[in-house]
Length: 107
Image (cartoon, rainbow, N blue to C red):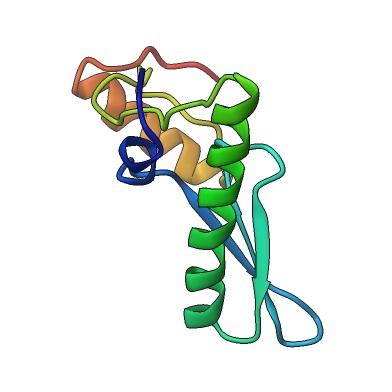
């Protein structure tokens, strides 16, 4: 079984958002409900480490599952994404993709 120190070393995803009052809301994407606020980015980064330690410690004590960050190496990428472009650019991109053999011309 992993210890708190093991979890704290993992590369969790931090999400930072500047609020209307100038403060910074920060959360750990993988740990639902693990968040904090700081007056500066630096303060928010320090505060989230304390929140993360508390969240993980509580979960370990209660025997709750602790999600681990998804590894970029194990995540599957299709090579496709959806984006809105002009019809002219769509045509150019489709033709170029077809020439590389990575797409059929779909219009």
